[in-house]
Length: 219
Image (cartoon, rainbow, N blue to C red; front, side, top):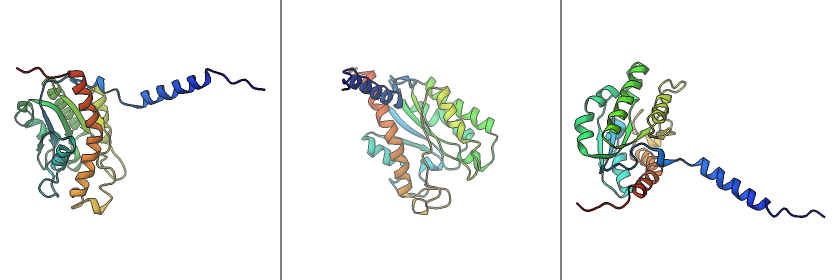
């Protein structure tokens, strides 16, 4: 007769808890998670502006409804990382940002900008936003059908600067005509999918940030 091991169940439970903890993101390590800023800002190019969608169908508008908080749309069609960097101060840093979601790089790829330049511009954007005291979220996109020389820049920059990384927010949209308004821009349904993917990651971050920052003190 085999005697049951009374510690076996406890041991297996501990393993399950440990694996679950390790598989999640440690949001407390995000730089500036205790930010005293107020604004949530989406900063990017036409994918942020909402080209191809109707009024209120751009992803920042949908994200605002999903989060139940105001979200500023700071997207400008055609922007490269260099052009975005040039308008960062006036359109982001002066808005008292708490959280800035960066979705850039597509136009750098289309215009064949040097990867090193794209990386430097993105790093400078993240650096300046964090120096202002805000959290940064970097939304990654896969660029190119066969190769992706730019995609790794997003994840590597997020890791280097302790920003939150969201991989492939455009996954499946470029290849699904029902989610696109043209060859490169989503339609309302496509932007809704982007917003949902971002909200799934940003919502827990904001909740953790609220917990760590604690209740606000009236002035």
